[in-house]
Every structure is written in C-alpha cells, then in structure tokens.
Image 1 (cartoon, one colour):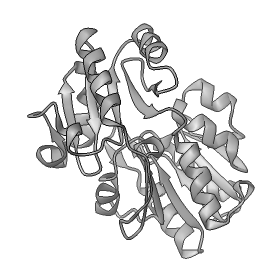
Image 2: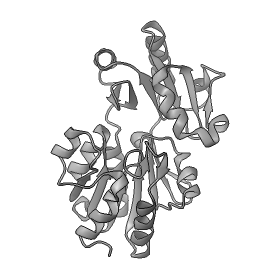
Image 3: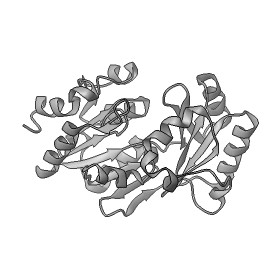
Length: 263
C-alpha cells in the first residue's frame, strides 16, 4: 500500500469516549515510519489539523470539509473549492424560511447562523477551542470570507426537500438523521481524493481507506481495499471489502496487521 485514508469521527475519534484511540495513533505513526502516505479525510473544517497534531496524529495530507479543502503537512492549500456568495445567501434564506439549523464552515472557524439541538455534537468535538472556532455573532460572514462547507439541522424528510430545492447546486448528506453536511455539487471526499492521488501519481488500487459513515462509501469503493469500522452504518459495511472491529476494540490496528501492512 502506498497511501491509507482515514476518516476522523467514528474512525479515529471515539465519539462516546471523546478520545482519539491510542492504538490508531500508534498505527498511524508506524505507517509513516514505513513511508506510507497518511491522508485524513473528514467533514471537519481545516482546523482539524491543529486538533490532530495536539493528539499526536501527524498526516501527510488533510482532506477537510468533505473535499472542499486539501492541505499538505505544511498547512498549504493545494486544492480549494468555495461556496459562491449567492449560494450561501440562498441557503441562509431557505433555512430561515423552513426553521432549520444552519452553520457554515470557513477555513479557520465555523459560524452558527441558526442554532439547533442537533449541533451539540459539533460543540462537543470543539469544546477545547470552542470560543476560538465556533462563533455565533454574525450571519453575514460569507460576504467577506469564502465558505468551504456547512451543515443543516434537519430531519430526513427535510433533507430530501433541501436537496430537491438545491438540485445541481449543492448536496446535503445525512450524518445521523438529525443533521447533514452540505457540499457543493460534485465536490466530495472522493472527488478531492481523486485529484490528490492524480497529483501524487498514486493508483487508487494501491490505497486503503477506513470510514464509518455515509460520506465514506464512495472512497471505500474507489480504493483497492475499503474497510468499514465495526461501528459503521450498515450501508457502508455492505459496500466495503472488510468490516473491522469497533473503534474501541482497536479495529484499525487489527486490520492493518491482518493485511500485513504493519506488525
């Protein structure tokens, strides 16, 4: 394997224990010592890099905001897809009209435009830097800073209506039935990975990926070996090559040993 791709939440980060699993941190260290490229692909904004480093996780590349930003280990943007102001305005108006939660992600922070209970998980993930990264005091920041993604607080029925309304402009992807990530049409974790691997001249068949949720399905089907965590949604398990043990059962480490990538 030349490169291995990891999701964060539910894959590296145990959302119940609220920790990055130690075995996964060690596994990533071993991979990099062997010269295998480590790529983190997440729905989180780019400041996730700081959180990873604070937890002793070093990566070669970060795919953030579900593919809207790709950064190298020096913090330089090598791929960037941003939301047009008009689209942000339309999403803002739509969520206000339909009483749905809304946040927009920016390169260095996240703004909550319309708060909702479903966003509590976002606050929890960022609690250590909450005052620096999660802000509430403006609903027009997209006019001066380019958004790289967002979330809506919505039921599955509301999600369908949202996607029907914004057809071919942006797409909301369900996370847990209560909130969904928003991405530009045709911009995904997979699209960013395709572009990155082309830059690196790496064949996807020489890659392995780990994920746990709906937004990991495309990547797991694209690479040579796609692995679903034991705690994954059933749809991902059905479309992956292998199902690992749960995140709290050292699923990543055991899988890498099973495939003779580390020992």
